[in-house]
Length: 327
Image 1 (tube, rainbow, N blue to C red):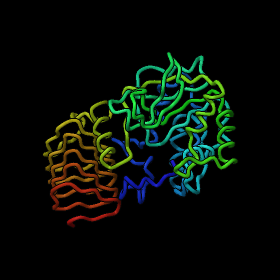
Image 2: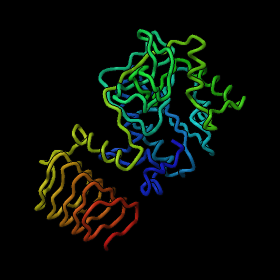
Image 3: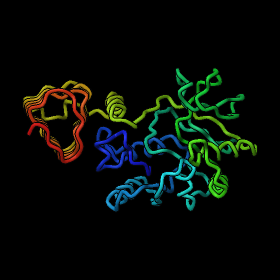
Image 4: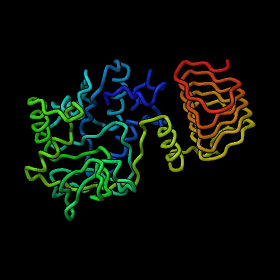
């Protein structure tokens, strides 16, 4: 999670992408929670590979790990040199069974992941347009190889960016070989897929884990869309628990703690984080972050940063933290 999240600006100017809220819960915590529910064993350690995010962010991540009774380890990627390099930054934690996941990869699946009788598992999602993805080529119930954006119909199973390795040391060894020998891709980066290809060539058994839903949060629109998807499930707040205060609520919505609502129409598909104030406004398909204020406005398909003020505005907007529009 060392990237700067440029496609989610202005919000990521002040908040690292994996810490952005999705209906009351940080993106990174939702990912960890999915693993806690779908892995057959307990998570013992969570290794975070960061950029220069500061001690406050690091403490939030340590707290997240603590909520799962897991050790938190913090590593740094000072320069973006590719996915293999990013993962190798956490080399000291790559022992025994490990999961490698990119911090904007959210998914939903039923039941537990089957990891028996395999050296590695790769999470896959059936897609309608495989030519837009890296896909796994199957032989029976095993993964035989990978094809990047195939022009021919090789497979419709896209790689979502989540990997299990029974022996983290094996992956660490391949990553070290790639970096020590400066084996960069045509893009000029060290690629995780190169290490996985090497393990396949050495006869390691790779099995698939197929997910039901693959949720992207790489852009502002996908962040809104993913929030709306989760609002359609358990993330929504029951309207009966909300003090309407002359408001009309159209579910699904999420409304956090200590939120003030007055003379407004909220929803559908609205997420309002803790401490926000919404007065004399109409909101739909919108995210309002912590302690923001929206007054006398009509917002659709919008995102409002923390501690921001939107006043007498009508339309769609995306503003970062500590901003003022129309005030």
